[in-house]
Image (cartoon, rainbow, N blue to C red; front, side, top):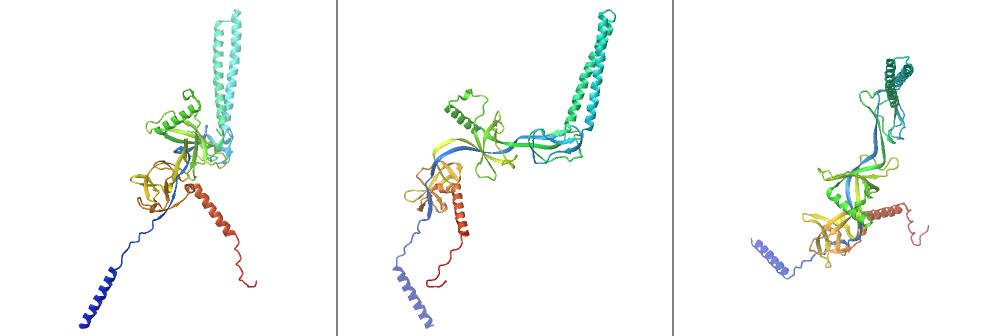
Length: 425
């Protein structure tokens, strides 16, 4: 028992000595270094303002090839998917029945013509006798009526001949337009045109290609105001221009394409704004050469319409842009390396850069990397970078250069190791 008390006394004394020793040392908090971030000044350049739309590609010409007479489909004279000229033979419908109808109509015409010649001869004879007072007036009237009736019979018979010739011609089905012919919808040997004009195939002309898109009322008024002002600058009175299309370029990009690589022109606009949607439909026209062509009918398309240029506009990398409940903002580092939250108004996207319409000065240092470490009111350790190097094209070029350098390094033969000093071969 006495031994336990002694141990407890010794332990307590040791603890007291340790506490007293600790009280004699000073505790100091070492503040962590400020986080490193990358900053860059805005890229200042001239930009072109655009309106952007979504649209649909439509072939400039499209025609369904139908059977205009009934009969058995006798022959097919094309290869599906190939180019055909206007008037090229595509199908043959059995012409025998229509050839016979033409012969019958021609015979009826010949009979009517013969009846007319007989009636006309009798009329002339009766009229001559009547003038010589050797015939009755009734005979003259009779043969005059007969001549007029047979004349009408000739017209009726001629119409039957014309119709029979048309029907016989319709047995040779030709391409109504030049373009790419589709597959045959009906196989040879089937009855077509019975009760309806059977669709046999279709022909599409997709060069040039149309693109339809809708422009809202606000943007329409903006575009018209800009181009009226532009015409006045060029010395053209908009009030005296009639029947001429506005010379407006358009740019188009497909779903799998970057940017807007296809260039075309404005071609057509509806005559009024749809009051239900508040939009007006416009059409652009784009050259579409080659096989296969770059554009196909029915594709989703992104359309860009330029409005004009502006100089000295600031742009920043899209990775620097932040959004929260208070709106769009940037993190800016001031002269004391303290982070400030800067509310901005942004515009269009250009090559991975965002136009800043308001809220940014050209000499501001914008945080472009390490944004998550930048807290408003706190210091950072900034490292300068070039904003131009953060564009999509610049980063892609840098990645390609790096890949090319790595490829060259991989393909180059390994250097032989240096022989040890004094060593033999």
